[in-house]
Amino acid sequence: MNAKIIYIYDGSYQGLLTAIYSALKAREIPAALIKECSFRENLFYDKIIIETSEVKAEELSRNIEEHISRDSLRYVFHAFHSELDKIEEYIYRYLLMGFKLGKKIDNHLTKDYMKNVQEAAKKVRRESHRLKGLIRFKEAAGGKFYAEVEPDYNVLILMAPHFKSRFSIQDWIIHDKRRETAVIYSADDKEWLLIDLEADFEPKLSEKENDVQDLWISFFGSVSIQNRYNPKLQRQFMPKKYWRYLIEKPGSSRDYQN
Image (cartoon, rainbow, N blue to C red):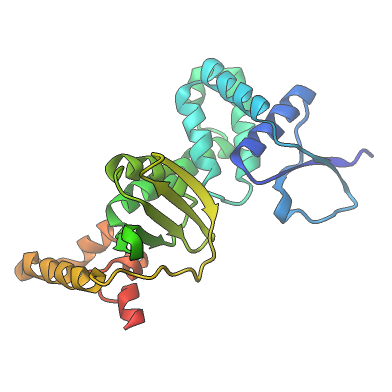
C-alpha cells in the first residue's frame, strides 16, 4: 500500500500557495498541508518539503482571480489568517472545486470545506474591522506611538493598510502579544513591515502619556449617559475580551500596571 503524502510548507501565505500550486501541478490530493513548525515525523506518511516561490504563489493568485473570482482569492487570503485547524486542507479543496465551478463556487455550500473557508474568512474580517475601532495608541518616548492587542485571529496584516492611511504622518507599532509579532510603520519611508516582537516588550512612554490617558478617561465618563447604560449592547460592540487594552474601560492594562 502506498503511503499518503503530506506537504510541508514554511507557514507563510505565499508558502501555502506554493504548496497548493505544486499539488495541483502534480494532480495530487495531499493527506495534509502542514506548517513546518507543526510537523511531526510519521512513518505512515511520505513528506514533501515545499520551498516557497513568490513566482508560483503569484501565478496561482492570478489563476484564482481569472478562473474563479477575485472574491474567492479574498476568501482564501482571509481564511488562511484564521489559523484554524485544517484550514489549509479546506482551502485546497475549496480551490479544487473552484477551478471546476468557476464563479459559481460561492453559491455551492453543500460541502463542509466550502462553508469552513467562507466562515473562517468572515470571522477574520469581522475581527479586523472591529479592532480598527478598538485599538488605543499610547505615545512612547521619541514621539512614536504604540498599541497592543491579543486578537483571536492573525489580523495584523489586514489592519496595517488602514492605519497606514489614517496615521501616515507618525511612526507607530501595533503589537500582537499572542503571536509575538508586530506591524511597525515608518512615516519617513511611508512603509509598514511585519516583524517578530516578544510578548513582554513594553516601550518607555512619554512624560505626557499618563495625563492624556487621564483626559481620555474623563472624557469617556463625561459623555456617558447613565439612564441609557446598556452593558449587554456595549459588549456586543466592545466584547469584554478586548477590554484589557482599552484605556477607558475597567480591567484595562493600565489597571494592571497601577
